Length: 361
Image 1 (tube, helix red, strand yellow):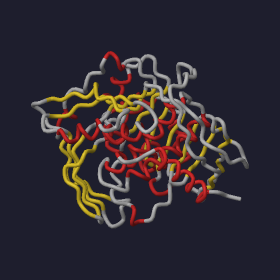
Image 2 (cartoon, helix red, strand yellow):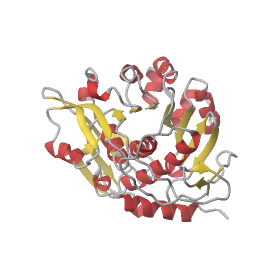
Image 3 (cartoon, rainbow, N blue to C red):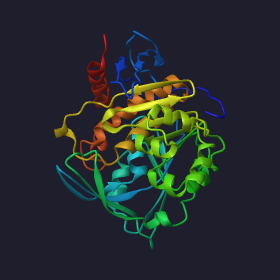
């Protein structure tokens, strides 16, 4: 975004179904109406159309964790499944474009997990380091009957406590950068390796707001976008209204902020406007494992923008829809299983149903 914008020639074209106008329930008195109009997903009142044709550039990169997860939910239990922010992000983004991973794993990382990531044809693992004498990041959690709430059973940082992985030289031409959740000092160092970037977006969490606030604020002056949930937005800004909180974050440097509200959707606050989008309405019986929903949302969101090679306000609005729908599939199974079997036709069908469910007038 900071270095300009140009369109790429098409290598391959994919057509997705439409997204009509949506009106979210009032959020602290705020309401916004979204419509998308072909051919370029432009904001338009009263017009319904199709999402555009686009082609997949090869310049999206994600830095973060590859992990081994054990998850307990009211629906069951999964031990030792593939997880981590990089894994969910890359799996989601790969539905639209090629995505490069920069991460590290230990000698205990299962070969089966490598095979899972390799099964996504658009994921490049050349930036994945294996450290034989180290341990892979591992996390265990239990979701309560209200699956908006969970408790962490354990976190084994493993390689995350070591030096960050190196960026391969061939990756340094990446233009779309997603800095998945890690210490903001590490995110800042990784960001410095991408001088040709057009769009850099960071994720963060309450831990870094608590213990590394100054470093996080310094990072915000360098990135174009920030993704966080509404509790973190309030924690960072002391503003209970998510729109007011996001606007205060804009003053720290980013061009836009995406505030995730879980089952209540997401809010986009951009220097050129504000938009909201509801979550896809899934019945409880379809929700198996919420782990990775936020990272899948980010993967769908960034994958869409990279695939179109556009970073304007309207394109970012449309990217919210892709992220929302992708995340709605992730939670239907443990780990990456649902994303492994996901097709463009599945996305197309759910977008159409989302259109019907959210249509106004």
